[in-house]
Image (cartoon, rainbow, N blue to C red):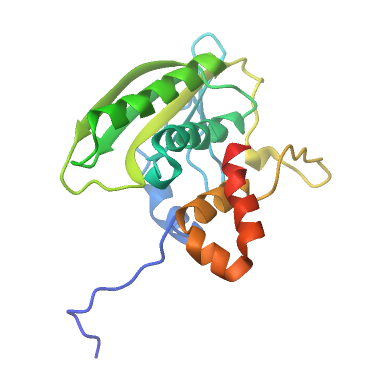
Length: 211
């Protein structure tokens, strides 16, 4: 017999493809004809056809802050994790919404530093923060301290998605494969990485967050 008092352990991270197809995909609200790309496993963006024939591209992800990076670098990294999903469509971000659900012990100047970096990066890429929410709450903890949505407007055929790729297409790789995961893990667990891989590899891995 199964012990009903023992909580079941689930894998960390994103849900499986099977869970997506059997649960999430069946609960997506009204089926609208102007939704050109809805939620899909392995696709980072959604696309909605606008009345003038153009398309609105959007993506939503957690705001991921790692204080061990230092507040400025942590905010820079958080912005680019979010922006990178939208740019998989080939379109740069134009509008941003941000929901900050922060731990109780974060200082005002730390919040200001993160907002200043977000403001700087948005200006750099021509994006405006159009709405949001900021507060401290019990139970909130790093690294997931809220969520953000990035949006952009594109010509009706001026965007792509990952599931449009076909055999024979060419991939342009501008940086290193697994760059984001390498930077996150090596900066979050530097002692463990150094123990397993050595000081030189750890130093190079941690520097990936600056690329």
